[in-house]
Amino acid sequence: MEMFNYWFLLALILLAMEMATGTFYLLVLSIAMALAGLAAMFAVGMAWQLTLCALTVISGTMILRLWKGVRGNEEGNSLDVGQQVEVLTWFDNGFARVAYRGAEWDAEPESADVSRNGIFYIKEMRGSSLILTHRKP
Image (cartoon, rainbow, N blue to C red; front, top):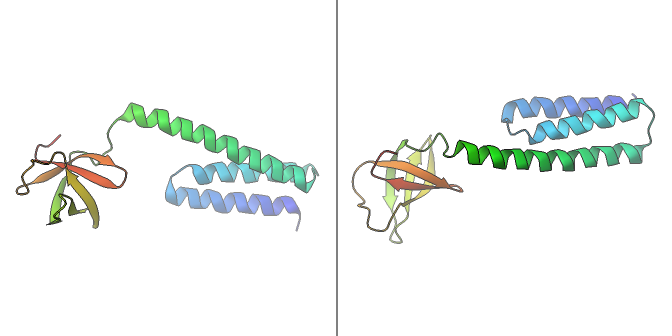
């Protein structure tokens, strides 16, 4: 089997994986593999194929990170903000463990004087930790 077939096969596999994840990073890898496959079709040397693939991955990742950064600032809050959570347990340090979307999450109140009783809503997300409030945003 010719080398370009392997490149295109890898591109298709990564494209299928991208459809399952939706992160766009695998799409960048898939495009890079397809470009390397095109280079292989035109009998470009293996070193140039790998270089083209690597440069495409690097530039595509940089563009994607810039796009996601701008897009994230435009969108503001995530869809999780305003959703109700169930507090499972409070810890002595003020943090909590909550049940949300079928999993347990680390959480903390928006301020230290927030009552530990009542219904809580997600005010914001900081990394993988939820910030809780009594008021629905």
